[in-house]
Every structure is written in structure tokens, then in C-alpha cells.
Length: 278
Image 1 (cartoon, rainbow, N blue to C red):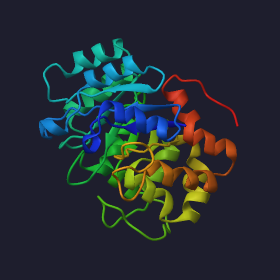
Image 2 (spheres, rainbow, N blue to C red):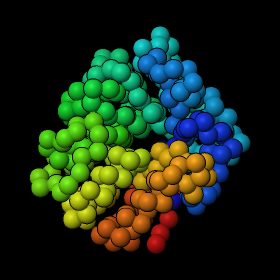
Image 3 (cartoon, helix red, strand yellow):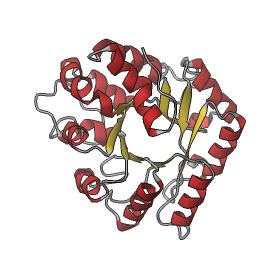
Image 4 (cartoon, rainbow, N blue to C red):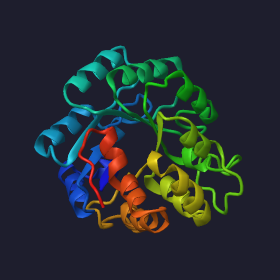
């Protein structure tokens, strides 16, 4: 398995504990995402340099991403520098800006030129707002691979979610924008991490079996965004997100090959890692 969303410093987790999480969950590797944002207290930011250092210590386990705040004067040159240093993606982009802010668009453009997939946190009223304008971003930057993540991305599996930035429950009678985007746009993937991704998988198992996993399995990336210390739920009362989501994917995917794609091979193709067979 490849965990496509993990952070150093999540709930004060150390770098070594982050590696413990990867190993404890039985992952082949994990994408480590730094966060650079002028909107967050210093204690809640993780610089790209920390991710690159851990990648040097554990190159087989760590898939390094970079992060730049697009409001920084040197954001675009640093994107190029980080790509040259080995980063294979960008994000988590978690900004108190509209999703289609011109400064963010500059980052999207350069990511496309550099071949860096970018993980965007979509949370209406808080981060990357104006979520329904994400479709115009997907159309404007067809060469940039976007990885959609967080509450509003998965809430919009239905057309009019309530809450739009939380964890709506109940059956999905009509597919919403997120499902349509995944099916329509080759440059979009879905990050199944955290409570939002888990809620998207479990709130309506018929929808997940027939549509989300049934038709969009090739566009989904298993991930945890889990704060526990060891991949087994230490310090997190509800348990590791990954241990909840893996059995759901294996049970509801249309085939073992589709489940393997979600858990490993889709990410392997994006992040230049070996694929595996059933």
C-alpha cells in the first residue's frame, strides 16, 4: 500500500514516529506533505526541508512533496528548486484563498510544467473557497494533476450537501459534482484520507460499490492523513484512519485488481514508483 497523505508534526508526531506510522500500517511508502501557509500559526506549519531530510533518512519509505504559499515572493522559484531536489508533488495547499485565486493559479501552472501533482484542501468558508469553481481550474490547467482532498471535496459527492464543509450523512440519491469531476477530468484524482474521505466511502455503501469505487476506482488514492503515532491507533481514540478504510475498499471494490489500484497502483503511477500485481 502507498499512503498518499501523511504529515510530520500531526498532533505533535515526531519524524521518527511518522516513520513508525508508515511501517506500523504495513505501507510500502507514504507521501509526506509539508504545509506552508501564511494563514497558519508557525507551530502548525511543516517546511519542505523537513520532508526532504526525512526522505534522505528513509528514501524507500518517504515520497517527498513540497509546499509553497503562493503569496510568497519566491514561491515559484522555490517550486522549481524543490522539484530539482527530488520532490515529486506539491501540497498540501491549504490556504485562506479562493480556489481560483490568480496567485494560486500561478502555482498550478508551474506544477503542470514541472510534472508535480498538487494536493488541494477544499473546505468551503475556510480553505480554497468557492469550491464549485474548482471545475474551471481543472479546465484551465489540463496539464496539471490535481488531487482533491478534505471536507467539501467529499461532501460534494451529492449535489447540495449539508453541511458543505463537514461530514454529511445518509444515502446519495443523485451523484454530485465531485463524482462528475472524477469521471470527466483526466487530471483529477481523489484523496480518500481523514474523516472526510472515510465518510465519503462509508456513508452510502451502495453508492460506493456501484459508482465511486465501481466506476472511479482508477481515479482514487488511498490515504490516511492520520494523526495516530504508530499506524495502530496510539493516541487517537477512534483508531487509525487507514485501518478503518482498507477493509471498506477491499470489500466494496469491483475486483481485487481495482482494490489494489486504489491502495497502491494508482499512486505508484503518479509518483513514479513500481506497480504491483495481485
